[in-house]
Image 1: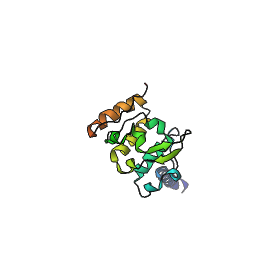
Image 2 (image 1 turned 90 degrees about the vertical axis):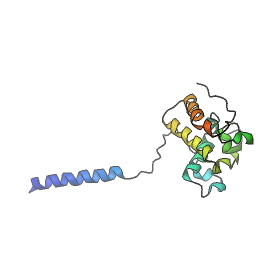
Image 3 (image 1 turned 120 degrees about the horizontal axis):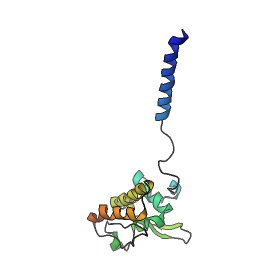
Image 4 (image 1 turned 90 degrees about the horizontal axis):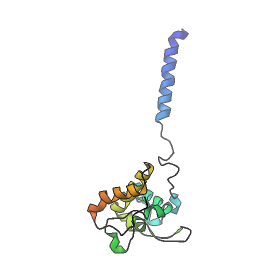
Length: 153
């Protein structure tokens, strides 16, 4: 009798393991090195914004210096933007705390897409100079680029 139940018990155990393995987790897919600002730091004008837009702002708040390495090609150079970072943050304190947000990226898919690509390429371990080359190649067709200096190699 016990020998007949053993295969059945084995199948049940395997089934449970598969179910547990497929359960969603609360862990982010971003590595620990990918710092994101908490939702509580987002400005009120982002209430109701898409997840991608909110994530782009969260990244920009926490990684302003990183986004300063990459241009934006949506035409915002005529708004005196110098990099993709300026699409999110108008001013910040010396310690990096955002003191005024720019609403521009909240309504511009190009700005957000550039930021999401920067995030993805960083997760893949790409160097800033290679990320910059990708951004230049992929987005230059959309409009004039901000006058963003090249990152060091």
